[in-house]
View (tube, rainbow, N blue to C red):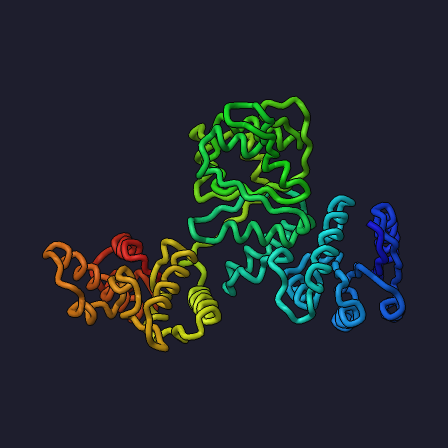
Length: 459
């Protein structure tokens, strides 16, 4: 594809290498290491692409992008930098770039990124400075969290994203494993390539094999046409195995061989199909234990588990619960302006105390439930689902208004309400000191911990 490309990079070696790559891809590069010269070229030349390391321009980068979009409304801006930084990526995309690629980038990856950037820009006039980045550019803004443990996880994810090593995401259901996988893909040098998810738990073995490897026409009854496998479709991108622990044991050797050799044959075929993918897997189970039990191949485990990343459950993300709840409320408010506007203080207190066994997904469902049923500006305890009302320290006051129930059920709920209120009050009185709270209650620490776990309470 021919087209004039302006390349601005203050690293002379990178500039020369980029010029060679662009020429080999059929572009006509205009290269410079000088910002003022780049601005003159923008005014005098007809350009389709701006390829630059905006981070080396300090505060001048924003002006360059603004000038580029003013003189060339449909120009495609691609950032190619040696800096793998989460905040820099988000801010760069907000300023008008379509893709954020981290060096080194292979020729194939650069080719795909530039072609997609040009197509995207020409189809809708490009990304305007100050607008929200497109979903395919980066998913990082969707990850909400300011707690220390989340910062650590995001830092590991950002550093791992810049390489091509395989990653396994460990975490309970609802912790956002697929969101993290998409974010890592968006931060990687493969961002311009496809992100292809594989749901290992939903397909039976015979169908899963056909989905992964593809098949030729006539390979089996019902194969009326040739179909490419997901590994082919993920070429130059990311292949995401969701619930990888559910991969059938009999299919694992074939998958391992394909990943090792980066090639395979379709079912019923003889032609070798080559592919280049980065694998991200996710599971809510202990793969080490499954290996010991003989339910997961050790060699495949080592092939996938190059960089393990453990996503924390919501109950360990201090202060993130309120941040997430307000985010989900704002999202609903944006779609439905007539909905509730804020949470009552007693609701926020309950949110912080509740254990959230379903993690972020459960919290999101609770907020959506409240928004759907609340007819006031404020969401109160009465608007919460029954299971949260049950665990509220104030539930004793709500109990008289609940429907009449059978004696055993009413007794169970009343006891649960008492335990929650009693344990919560002790923790407040003794500054979350479990030893002192258990001593005051006349029970041992183990029993006190059991009560916390039973009612999904946090210290």
